[in-house]
Image (cartoon, rainbow, N blue to C red; front, side):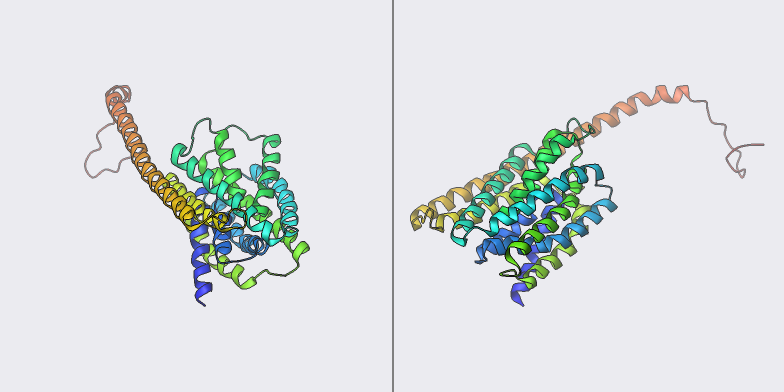
Length: 329
């Protein structure tokens, strides 16, 4: 029972992050499952089974709040499903000894990308509104889907930043479209794992635990996407993923690092993480101050121009007391 509650909380937190950033549900959930000793292929399969429900709910919620571009969903989701099916097949054929470090390395790379991107760059809002090309979205979806299945996550960390970097969609629609198209990826990856593994090693109870938490969080995340500071959240989540998977790699047969080395690496990573979060918070405050200054300047300009505007408007006749205002006979 304790495990189920923990998994539900993890699913809730991971979906809040995913629904707000457009990434990190699979990365966060798979990182936890690996940390408690789950087989890599089974961990990815379990997370993708849970994602069928969470991505469906998240997509519906984002659609309800107007955060979805259905053309982008179709152009990136179908190639993403193909890539996910192939990735699930590849991961299922790797031995546990090889798959665990490979998956941790992919997750570590994705976590570092999230940490660096949101700490140093935040979200670029330039050049919004230009159409997304199929020749860009198709290959992106194929690669992102493959990485997502083999790494237990990666659809958002690969797809969201790439589309954001293009500057052609506003952030909330990027996040909503990526979260919605993830449903196709989750279904395809799950079918791939079922074809390769059957039900071997896939814990349906754990998947339901993750799903329960994710279903609760999905509509909340779709609402929060307009209010939560993604820069800080990205730094926090990225650092957690880097630390957890660094631990797995340092203890793996690949490295088998002695205790002094491991603890030294942990200390450095904790320091970098703390600095990143502090920097993100300061930049967030700075961005808010700039936005407030711009709003104040706009209001001042409007107030300054108002006398001229009023002078050009025909004076409104005074309405005698007790007589209704409006069109006169």
